Image (cartoon, rainbow, N blue to C red; front, side, top):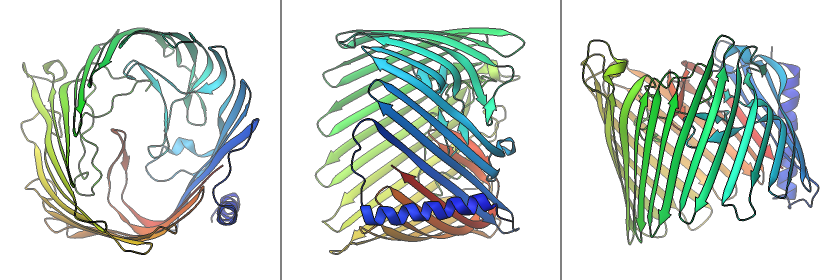
Length: 472
């Protein structure tokens, strides 16, 4: 039976939506101010099981003082989320003071040192991930922003409470000298059995269209290096990221190692994403952008090799992943825009341990037509060719949306190469001011769901989903 509290929450969300319809966009509140948001995602599965993820966030600001809470309720977490989240809790709570360059926080907070390889605490509800630190943080920056320093420490979050064994502390400082910025940070982790120190040094430079950033990270178990280069001039821009990881897995989950490959947004192109090989990989990602009149060109490529130190019986690097993606966009007139997208991918499911790889080629035709009225129509046709895994796929999307805030869509992925199975979805959405609601029903394929280059496993299911958000 659906939990009564969840039903009441849905009714509250709909009420807020109709209030938003009457009020429109909320005016900015004078200080002191209270802001926040409510989010609920619920699924009724074909086996009759009801699951729901619910969040309430409130932040109060008055001058230099601020405080906030985040409450979460899982009568049963959605499939693909950790079952240990079940229940209700207040995993986010803090008070803070910011004045004269000083900032003091007590409670639960998120933070990041450098690129996040050494330390990153963050939240992503799509992944069901939140490794906030419960403790304290003190920081200071000079009035001109040239120098800053920060110290923090506490207990990482675990499910709806805190870890019983893990502890973390760290400090970071940065110095800006013109276009050059120098950074340094250090951490100490304790998992109840051993203490693991770590450190990082980084530098970044910006000037005359060029940018460069490098970082070296070391811990007791391994090390990592990153180099980012960028250039932009008029209609052209480029970005190159090179990264090496050697035994950088963190059992505490307090670092950030997103995949170097492009995060695909088209259905078939994202069917078999690559996941970072923290035990040992060397790779790079290159992006090239060019705009010419009504044309836009984007070329992206990634090459990732597994290090021999992370493999058994291999003395040289092995292919873990490579791809090349080409996107050509053309705006024909005020009403019509088309995109031609090609993605060629080769992925090693064993990260180079075996010779076998999975190759796939994806072609997408994407078009958007806007009428002279409030309506726009989007059509997509996608095809995946492969001789591995489940072989060939075809997919399509039809979406009708209005500037008045509503949309409807139909989409389907069909595996005609092996399983002969459809993965379909039909849905509708409505947005008004700060309120948004989406209702859908479909058959979802098992696979990886990725956000920001980090992925979680999603089991196959059939069911109806209702997602509502309201921010104020």
